[in-house]
Image (cartoon, rainbow, N blue to C red; front, side):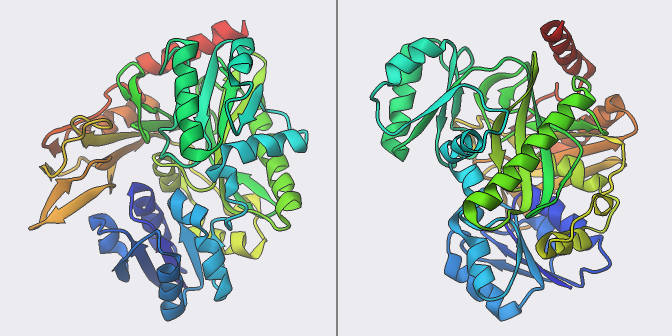
Length: 434
């Protein structure tokens, strides 16, 4: 099969690697914003274009006629890449624009759960102007402000973490109203967040192993939000989760998939990535994304034992079964190397050198450039290093060894996947649930 992959980050690098493991993938075509050195080496044809140009993506598809496309990043999905490819007979692992509102509009998703009486919503309200905003916030207590649209994981602000007073939160909410014309205000939930990504063929939902991401920039979960500094997985469960937590999260995703089919008149085909939080009395939904997570894709795809191209084909054909998504039960830890000053004042244009990686470590290129044969930092995350082992402690040790192989002005979180940090989260949930 000839497969088109859209995107060029670390998430797309691991997707490309996983597709290339398939016996069915004879040609891998990449449509990218810029050159990803790792993906370029895997591609049969690597084309640099504009991911915001739907006509260009359609023209590339028309010229090369892939059997199907895999859509990586949020923006081309939200802009309708699946729609323009479908117009020329190319199916996509990635939802059409209407269904992609699951990610591109937080208000749409909250309203969908409410309309179809799906459990998992916190107390919330969608505002299109500031009328009643202050009264709702005062009544809510600790609250969360969410921009309605796509912000690369950086548009959510939580009271006590990103702002201290109701006045500060209200000021940010009014900024969001000015920018998007809509803002979502929610109650602040207490618990532990986790990612549960699921393959969906429009009707059937098959889960991947759960992962915990780390959004904050610095050790100890301090500093500003980022696109994700790293993540870990530990087989079928995370250390602080119960089987019932995963059952509840799965049930929410199944209900949302059914609601989307009723609401939009067709099914969601691709990856439904639920950001959930385990609270005192069950599981609540934080948000959905309409694609693989970054970094979470790097935790789960290297563990996939099934043929990924066959799995993608089943998604577009509507013939997905649980047997098509078998995963190893090993543990993974992913740590991102990012430019000094990231995310607020990143040093870009600096050169880095990657020393030879130890055995058991995989590296994935993200937002880097290549000049004169050298890797150059951009303003975003640079490289992800993944350790895979039978235990979390060994996987963490490997990931740490991997990220230490970077010479240059970068930093990373040392605490992701460590026994100390995970232990705190386990104790927090034990205390919360009595």
